Length: 271
Length: 260
Image 1 (tube, helix red, strand yellow):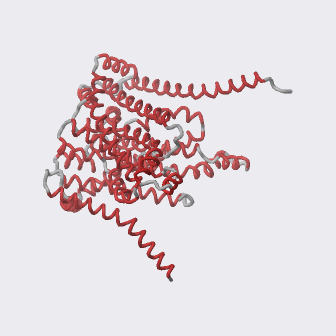
Image 2: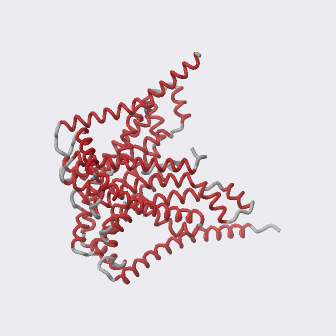
Image 3: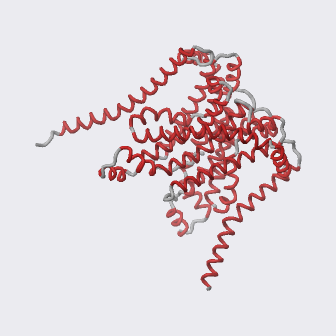
């Protein structure tokens, strides 16, 4: 006996609905569980060090209303944006060169390995001496945090461009420059977008490091102030804002990436 | 005979193109470092030779090795904890959809959040002791290990699982004989990334929480703008990070001899 068409569609739809609702339920459940644990832990410990979730939420609301948190975001992001843009320009140029020429790759890989292994935090005094205790140092710190990962991902992207396309361009007599412009650059565009996203993540870390160790501005100055005045709910609110902003920016970058290069399935190199 | 000569020349050429450029470029870099240092802009830009002398001196007094020991002890505890808990949680997420759906959000969050920002928070929660520093190492390494183990165990070749199932493998056998070996390359890649991050977590913790170990040396020599000593410590840290990474590679080859 043939099953009526409508029944099949209904069943399929019902299946789809439960399938899409269940993860959503579990996801929100996991958020609730964590918030409840936090709230009870804060209430039980009743200490100065661990504020409850509700206290933190109130502190966050007050800091936003008073304009201190938005102002800090503005101050902090100024150095981040300049440093990141510089890192993107330099990183893309070097990454393309490394992907384009084996000789350049062999010469620069040593330095990339070293840059990835160096704890950049340790080099901050060097930047302070060279660029002074101000915006210059903060930009430099953001730059060195972000640039290695951008170079590596762009270079990997160029290397993974379809070999057949490169061979075809070669056999049709393309010059090295045409090869770079017409084949390698478009082929590496997914990797370049991914490099932007990973670079943003690193730049935020650099920004925080600079504000902790170079000069306290923006979020850094708020953290120092609240840490000194023993207001843990305020510190928590600031920290969670920093973390939330960075996660949101990364998620946004990932959205843009998926929208612009939906075909891309590539392996990221995230050190 | 002629053929042999051709291949010999070929290998020699390959040696020339593969090993000469990086060595030359490294040498050039070292020479530039020495020259820039000799121009004496400031004490912090110390030349290579001064750095080597400082390194030798720090080894001689035992300061470097003693601090290295302190640092590596905390590092080992934090990293091993991250490896064990990271692999367990990642494998659970790969095996059970419910665990995945409960944890995925937090794992993604942890993986993209700047761990450095958590340090003040960890100080508030756990104080200024060894525990906090071990925890920093842990949080730096943990997320990437979880993500890699999860991806490795989730995307196991389904044919293998099906075959094991139809040959009557138990849940435990499936885990130990199919999932774990299948995920091993991804897990080892996770450890590789994790070990680098853990070294950074170790240094950050020692610079920002309790001033001990190699991080303390960086604080002292960096704060005094003593370039030669600072660079000597930094070179040691880079060497440690590279050696640890090579050790993980060797472990990878030992465990997964089929995966090249």
